[in-house]
Image 1 (tube, helix red, strand yellow):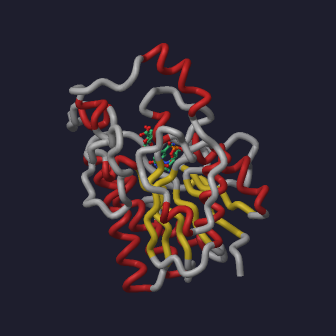
Image 2 (cartoon, rainbow, N blue to C red):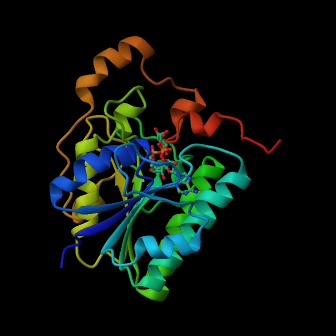
Length: 268
Ligand code: NAI
Ligand code: 15L
């Protein structure tokens, strides 16, 4: 049966807020979880991914989990380790213990951020390229994908890992024209990931059907995802303001953009 009750972690965040608005239209009943309280949502579970007891209670009885919680940008290794690596492990353990069979994991393009972006007639970036994290943040997403594979192979817990591009109401950079996922397409993709049968562990890129697309959406479409949006209407204004991506600028030549060139954040 299709999942109905879904735990949404990271529900207070940017993407969580967008999905709180959109996913109920597909018939889901959402249970919300975040570190931070959510205005107007008194029933949301306020918990840290470090709190294993709270996670067990939070996942009890749900049909599936959409796992968005965590640090969403580069940070110190210590903080990434706790929130994203240990936190995702704790969530999967809770899911295994409580018999939840499906997770949709918010992976990121930064798990493969050092992949060269295609130019001209280059082929689209395939889904099965070796992972090349561009940050400790991207490394944690690479870990999450491996964790998902382990829990499928060993425990039969299914995951769709979505290497999200940039899911915001509008693209705000020329790079984003290639990796943008409209919020509505994001909800379509999460719905497909929640309802497709026999996904095992499937990895997909998450974006709209952009004219300037850099990656191959075949595995996403195989779930039943049919993107309807395209960033191209935003292109003229963004290119006029920022110029086209430059040859020889490393932040413009790799999928991960400035994450590739930003210096690491070391602990103080
Ligand atoms: P965000 O930073 O706005 O939201 C993340 C939420 O997770 C926050 O509300 C935060 O309070 C919560 N959180 C952080 N640590 C936690 C912990 N230890 N326990 C419980 N909750 C915790 O990020 P955004 O943009 O909403 O992204 C959501 C997810 O999607 C993240 O995992 C991010 O890495 C991933 N993603 C998002 C992309 C985007 O375009 N928005 C692109 C690629 C990946
Ligand atoms: C991500 O993984 C981040 O969570 C998001 O804030 C954006 O920076 C996005 O990637 C991107 O690459 O644009």
